[in-house]
Amino acid sequence: MIKKVLVANRGEIAMRIFRTCRVMRIPTVAIYTHVDRGALHVRYADAAYCISENENDTSYLKPELILQIAKQTGAAIHPGYGFLSENAGFARRCEEEGVIFIGPSSEIIAKMGIKTEARKIMEDAGVPIVPGTKEPVTNLKEAQKVAAKVGYPIMLKALAGGGGKGMRLVQSEDELEAAFRMSRSEAANAFGNDAIYIEKYIENPHHIEVQVLGDKYGNIIHLYERECSIQRRNQKVIEESPSPFVKPETREKMLAIAVEACKKIGYYSAGTLEFMMDKDQNFYFLEMNTRLQVEHPVTEECTEIDIVREMILIAGGNRLGYKQEDIIFRGSAIECRIYAEDPENNFMPSPGIIKVREAPAGRNVRLDSSAYAGFEVSLHYDPMIAKLSTWGPTRKQAISNMNRALLEYKILGIKTTIPFHLRIMHNEAFLKGEYDTTFIEKVFNKEDLKRRQNCDPTVAIIAAALKHYEEEKEAAARATTLPQVGESLWKYYGKLQMTANNY
Picture (cartoon, rainbow, N blue to C red):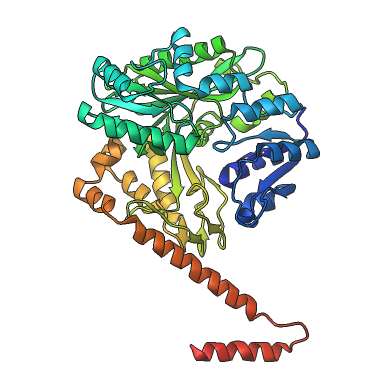
């Protein structure tokens, strides 16, 4: 039995997990840095521990300290997504220290975390894979040889990690040398590992993923698929379930293969198998995410299964509470990732203090967020501030609900991607479900994209820094004008009036 849960994460995903814990009447523990001391997840949890060593320390990657807090509080650890969620070493340390890790075993995380290893495992399990290398490519000559054999275009991908980091599309041999160098450099900076591998690029593909749940007793079920093809720079922007592209016979085959593969590798907890699908409905394994996915709400809305609840129960030694025939898929759901970015300025980060926040509400609307009026969006962390999801008995109604929710969603003080999402909700190709991973590039004309890409990022960064400085100065000024101990309030307000008159 899990009697307490520590979430080794922040922001909306920490809040999402805490809410399920509250429903389950499980006490919660938050961790935070000095930057996040006013964050909603810190205020919501039953207990909270600062993990910053000093004012300049903004890192959540403190495995030993987090483990120490978990042992001190008697809590199991849910890693959320990102940070330590797919860190096999951290999961192993939890196992060694007798702390329950709410996720799969460290062995499975390690195997699936190395993409070439995952490809070999899945191929042995009968899952079709994209043509490419089964081992890391260590030098340019080897890359040229593989590319010539596979055929251009190809994708260079980081061996460790994900999220589009270290990923480069190479259309011809002339582009390979520069792309190879950049891919390795980015992979090293992002994951501390510059190893990359090569895959054949599937042109105009669909990015489809299958959600699975399994227990420690060999029971595995799927919760159907999600369409994740609307992406920008290899990062998902909008997801929906079910996919409007996948045909029923293809869906049935893909779901069955995903479940069988998970049974063969002995997988348990929540997991996601990602596939690339071509225009002819041929699908190929990309990778497996051994954690909770950002876009899991659309699956929950259509199946009425609380995935976080199941993860906690499975980690506590319980058998899966469902058989495949118990899962009833209903309607359609869409999720928009809301970022603190300026879509009119090449999606540059828009940090700052949220002055006004009016959240959408009403039937069939779900908002996963940790933002509030007065909260400062920091440059130190991922710019996603919310996930807005809507459900409808049909895809058309789910889109209508999303349009209404986006129009209701008001955030002032920073720029957000809400206007960008509204544009997509009115796009004819999207409304028809006729899109693939090239959608954003095709929707926004080349001149618009060129103008945004040519924007000097220095200008936006300087503007953000100046804005932050002015707000800090304003806060400091307010602090210095507070009434002193023993000072007359009449004198204090008179002083404020004089200050106002000077302006």
